[in-house]
Length: 86
Image (cartoon, rainbow, N blue to C red):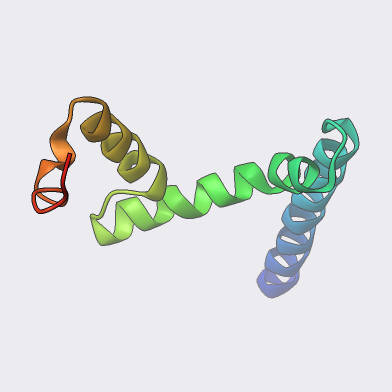
């Protein structure tokens, strides 16, 4: 059997499995268009973020947001608000 044929069939199969997974998550998601999209495509977005973190060495969006929230809770945003009256 031709190796390129095996690779093509494996790639199409992998894509089909991902598509089925997205459809199943879409069906089982809570009501609401935005939440359904977020729920259905969340794992794909998470995989993309992990890929970015591993290959660029930068933190992902989720880690950045968590750190920003923690800094705000601790009052770490004082540099930005230094000139603002209180």
